[in-house]
Length: 287
Ligand code: HEC
Image 1 (cartoon, rainbow, N blue to C red):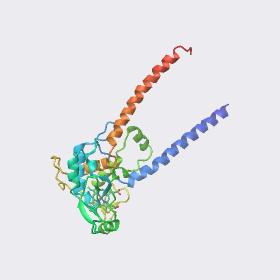
Image 2: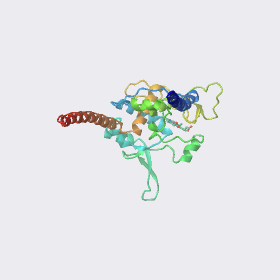
Image 3: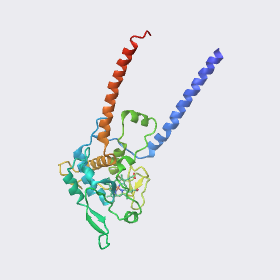
Image 4: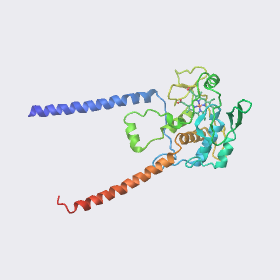
């Protein structure tokens, strides 16, 4: 009996050690990454959490930053100008979206003479690329390609590692995309001792792929003049354009969260109904 007991105790200890070992093994890469990897600080966003909504003023400012700064290198081929007037977005009117579209030149054609030509943009046009093709972009950028920003708000996320991703699921943390973009745009600094970046590359403490990035620091204080009086600082530009990119990547975020709330409410009411029906049905049955 004692033998069996101690045997099972041993088994328990072995199982506990295995679980602990597994936990440590899973946690190890995360801490190693933290030591050398990108530095990402969480930000607070109006669109976080189950009641999250975009701040329309912020999206409009973010569009301005994209238009005046980022669009000189980056396209957004999946975003059409008409969506700027969609519900749950920056809240431009249809006429404003039309006017914004008309500010870009779009290649079109061929015309009756067989020639390609440029015309002002229409609401159905997408945010165009400043370069005619990938080769032209690379040759202008020292061989690096500025990626399309349509889905960038959700395309990059820092690997959170065990156990954080489990908590994230419960705490509904879904903002690691805009957190990354914000940290990247504000993450330029002098390279620490012992790191040198090749010519044309900049040290950026948030860049995921490497230590040095081929994008020159795009934002600086006072570069864009906001129409609503918001102070134009590197931080506000970075925050606003990150929110704008999040909206572009998930234009139906508000609708999704509102539907989710309604579903949860329905489930609570439905669970109550089921409980009382069960009590009624079983009230006549001896048990
Ligand atoms: C002068 C051209 C230029 C401008 C202006 C510019 N970028 Fe970039 N961007 C690049 C290049 C080139 C890359 C690719 C960098 C690399 O792969 O090393 C890049 C990469 C990126 C990435 C991807 C980083 C990653 O993890 O792969 C993001 C996000 C980004 N840019 C956002 C922006 C935003 C937002 C703006 C406007 C505020 C902007 N960029 C303005 C040239 C530019």
